[in-house]
Length: 409
Image (cartoon, rainbow, N blue to C red; front, side, top):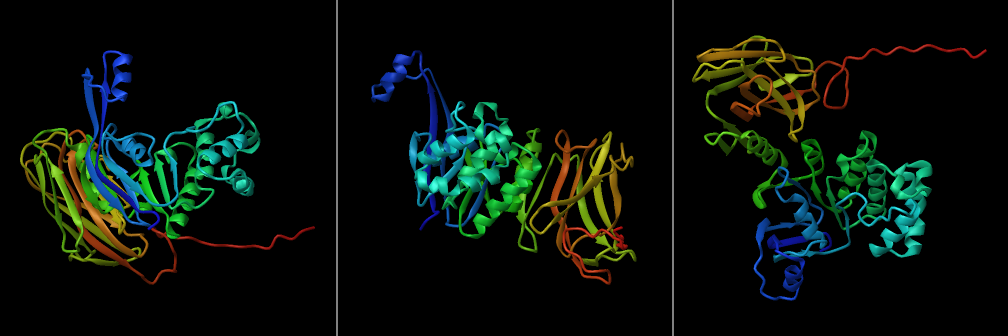
């Protein structure tokens, strides 16, 4: 089955020696005691089915890039095995395989040859790669004159010139301009629809949610979570905020069958979240343009200076649609103790579909430093078609159109 990836009990340990001679001796199996050992990948196992798109996330130093290098074979594992079926295209490091003194065209021929393509095959798609890269006259200039964004354009054009069975990308799309990132994501999505298996490392949650139907979370070289992107990213968000030892992260299944993540130090806790229509009744369905109130019921267990309550609306894929908080709205709720109701009144100019509400209690404007209670998917609601004009997209923007005839003299 082309595009299948099997990773079994994979480990990678880097060793430091007292001398290069000792390192050299270790290559031949001689017993040499290492000065230091650092395990970067620790007993990781998972499989990726053909046509599946998997995002790998984690904090810096979690082992994401090392894992991809082990999978592609640019690093040898200390233990375990990797099996990939089909043609693999990978972008691991900018400029990998490029010679700085060769032109873009020459590098495509050389690097493409190392990937197993014939000169005839590469010549057949050379014009297409040049057009896709959009680097103009630099295509015939040495790569040493390129910016990092131009190198990424060249590397991505080569890696995707032929549709691979497996496409592996390590943060390459974080380099360069927004236009080319969108163009690259469109090509990735097209290949994915045609059956290409995708393994994708990114710090951009939007890209992971858009491109992937599964996510893996790494922490200190260990695979700690494997599941749907929205629930994994919610858990990751809580991990980032967990700076205090007493902070707990909990996940449970909602009535809608999704995983809800909740975390915090319990200085304040939500006791309820309601969505009300303008008559004050609880509602779960609204028309485009309806007004609604999101009511957050919070119990403050101690006095908190600069207490902040925030809300975030997400679509069915977990993509952020809108968020705000009392700090940005300049509403002061400091030094309160006991139960408090905080109401957010909104006009729901949203596209048709299902949405969830995330609520958060923290200090000042961000939840990273002092997160009291972060509750993903605290409530859900639906936007249904109304009486306004048909439209497409995630939001409704009232528009007026006019026209006039311009006579040509």
